[in-house]
Image 1 (cartoon, helix red, strand yellow):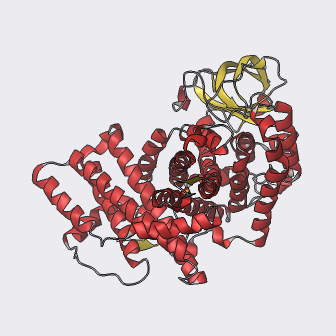
Image 2 (cartoon, rainbow, N blue to C red; image 1 turned 120 degrees about the horizontal axis):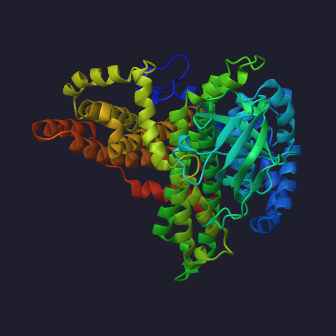
Image 3 (cartoon, rainbow, N blue to C red; image 1 turned 180 degrees about the horizontal axis):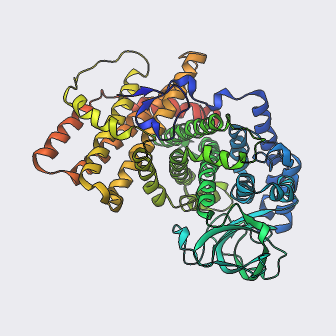
Length: 594
């Protein structure tokens, strides 16, 4: 059923095509330069940020800005800014390494992330030459700080329902902006705001607004559950006269800017979740070794080890997904002439190719961190509820990630929705694959045996893709144009896609490690991959049953469930023993292991 991808890997193609492990970028492939970038970031956080962590958490604007400028001096703010505008113009893998290693800086990492990502990239990708020359050097150095202003009091996920307006003056020299933006990160100290407004109340557009423009003000700081060291305030615009040349790209193209920027924002959010999850594992393993109960360290109890193993396994899958996705973006960006006038727009388009993968990373990353943080608190017991222990803050800070950059519910609707749209446009042969599957399912021969390492897991991945096509095809056939109204079914399809991408990412990474190091040195990744694939596959089976029960009845349902039973046959796996082995490595090293 699945085809080998020869040229560029198309976004969303992972559900219908196989990929050779040699095509996948993993964190085990880093160059010396990339390792130095990661080390520089980590050293900056350890040496400059963590010593003043308490002050930052009390919302010290001046200290935050001072540290951001130090980060700018090291090049940590200019990774995604082209060299022509005093940035570093790094690849996405290197950029991801910066984001991951900043994560232990907590709220400060969010301040930096909002600035370098959604705050700066709209100008990088969609700014005119004059706008880039005016703003990007200062944004790359930290001389100016950026903020992104999309959400409003009455519109969050429904961004196009925004009420902020822009009116062109009679002389054509200014746009007059009026409205309020809500929950704006960095609003307390930002110099540059990327603001979305409707020209004449209808054409959704984007503007570069400066803090010093008359009529710009901010409301009070929000009293938040977590990320307390980051500034979050409303932005208020009252008859703000914005020069016409500060219109970003074109009138009416604001939605394209917003959606393209959200793609990279979602990806970077997942990278930050990865860094935080690794820190939580380290804190929890160290505490488990130090905390004694019943005369021995709690790390010696199997249920404690089980938690640490499961935290590590999910984080391994997330790490595999994140760097695979970064590699896909780098491949897509590789063919662009970055000296051309439309290089920015072409870059945004190349990243948009992987909009599905970005949403998948966001959902899986935020939910993985929530799981890891929650288990981390549990392992700390009562101390996990005390602010003196950082796991308490990680737990509080993690919760916003399922809301940021489009809620996970919205992203779950986007994942299969975008896939279907791509298929309808002829960009992916999804419908053809689903139709071809029908005859193949009738010829299934059960009872295969598997002897090689990860052979059965590879087979289960292939079956998972068939299950998706079967369940998705049945849903499309039943609901047709009304499929978008069946949000529960779409969410289940999204979860199957998420698990397939995670399973495949971990599997391909581990196969690459085996080829490079041999099975003995890849023992931990092999164990984690076997457990993750088996447990994910069981989840896929349950989701598929719910979908089929929703779209079929009677003999049709019985037939489909019979086919599903054939697709989901697998041999039992001693996951308890494998998790004990993984836990032993985590406990011994007191950190995330891979």
